[in-house]
Length: 360
Image (cartoon, rainbow, N blue to C red; front, top):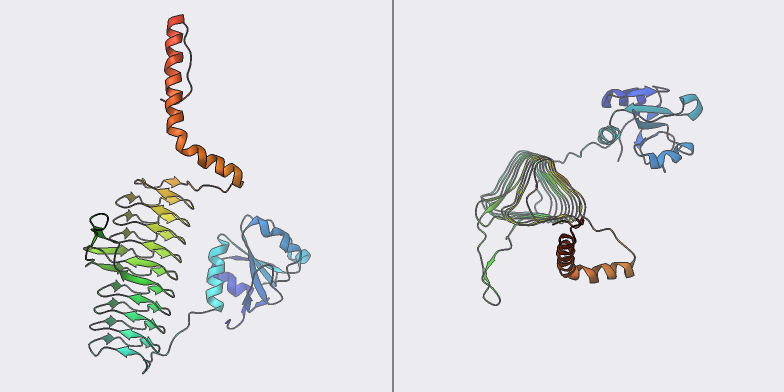
């Protein structure tokens, strides 16, 4: 839902941009470049959408500093030129779609233990369960179906969407957002023994989520076996991500959808894990490392590294041939080394040097 109208000059002041064209044009909605019409502002941040400029009916377009644009007289619209179009778009979207404020009421259909403490302005929707000794601080919102286990502690201005589960003893900082279906504090995957003699290792630690973390729908963060699983301040985690027991994720990192991080791994600050990255246990990923989609990470990664290892799709018959050859590579390599040695021996006997190209 949008609210109010703003002139293009007001929007420019709000995002620190420059107007090219009519500063007084009124804007009341943000729309995609394909669907925008009069009264809308849209944005052009990628060259592939440049062709839409000819047919776009938006009243204004957000563009980057390096984008060549028509003069307003030729285009019939205004432009808002900024250094970072995506950041400007986010700020304008929030301006027209402010965060909803709730009424601070507690539904009589919620189940709240008498020992729980709810701060001022906490909103509790129907069918929420709040266990013993839970503490929920000011202005936090609990949507229907939220489960807070015994001893959970939660900061101010958090939002827990429908069917979120935060299990016993876990802690959330301020302004944490958990989307629908998130599970915080399920048991880590820990068993001793082999075969039929697998004994479950009690998982008696907690999950500690610091301030300004946002976690996407149906993501799981397992409690520690001992101690804490930690998600650092400002980190953003996408949907369908698995964070295992005793993992420590640093501050302001990004973990995209379907990534999985195995137990006791340490991820630094401002790290990016793209979609479907898999990380083995007991390694470290250094600060500001970036790892591309579908990459498997079998060993520690130094700070600032840029890694990728996803396997691109190929024609099916070609892929089958590659997969058939892969198990034979060690044998083929041994054969090459053997042939190299034979060639070297023959070269020495003849007194002539022969270069070999395979890595030794």
